[in-house]
Image 1 (cartoon, rainbow, N blue to C red):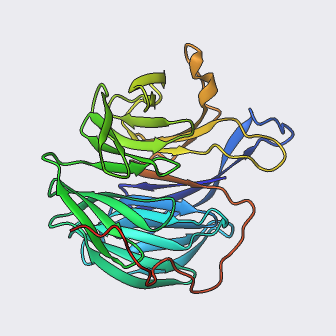
Image 2 (cartoon, helix red, strand yellow):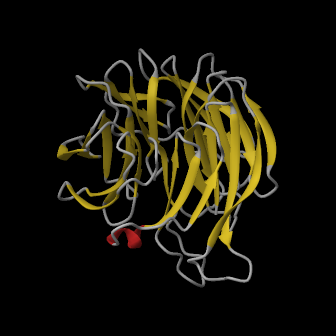
Length: 338
């Protein structure tokens, strides 16, 4: 498994999570550096990873691409004319290599790219002001965005256009689909709303201690949040209550969370979760140890920089799609709403 982190100092950091030498136990892990270099001309704002591919976005209006197995740069994308605020890969369930990359920017637009090769397919006007976050549905047919215009938008990725747009009344900073795509989560400062994906109906809402800066869906209806309280909290989204919490997971704000729970085909990995803080520290946790009074991280790396984002990927069982394959194609749409 690999992790990439972006920093305010314009550096991109890559790490590989693997067992310590001579200690094959999954409880003895280390974060081995893959690469670190100044990849942008402005602070890095967002990162995404899927299979062997990774990407970072910045205030310099560009997207930088990386190949994780070779720790090499793949070049850059220059379709945006303002800061890149959010990135997300879409990977079909049958593949480990992403099919599409979506990027959002501070001018309210969303770009759709083919991921093999990286070719620009479409630019969609999603919001009147900047996009704060985007999330792709597991089907790859639609995406949700939230923006500075205090609105929620739905993008039809089949036709490449906005299909739904509604005012929220408050500015949401994060939006995330759950792993099954049946629900989505919206974060507004310290509050998190759980909504039905079909009609956006509010199911439940819970309030964190302080402002939420990062969130990642987990299995069994869990949602992990982190932010200014420096904790990592696992919420049961069905009841709206705290399932468990890693108190003081970091000494500063939690700026990124990645759920790494996977199986490698032979032995189940522990329930791994990675977190990054603005103090430059990346930590990997076994969430099952959170029942202890003070769980210790399984692995840790200190970049000594102000981290702004974190993304993770598994490099196992790579299966590349045919060149030029894309989910952006003409198909009938039965749910168009404007």
